Length: 61
Image (cartoon, rainbow, N blue to C red; front, side, top):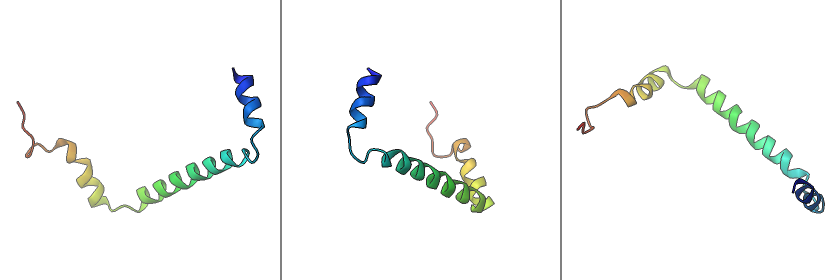
């Protein structure tokens, strides 16, 4: 099965660019995510981290 897929993929022109594009998207996404984490305001992070613990608008039955 893998030989069929590999042989089929090799016959497509320009297929070698897709792994590079996916790696670039992955790298950019996580770089932006790390940048956002380190530049986020501490008050916002504290507020969002307490959201699961708030029960004033939930019906507990």
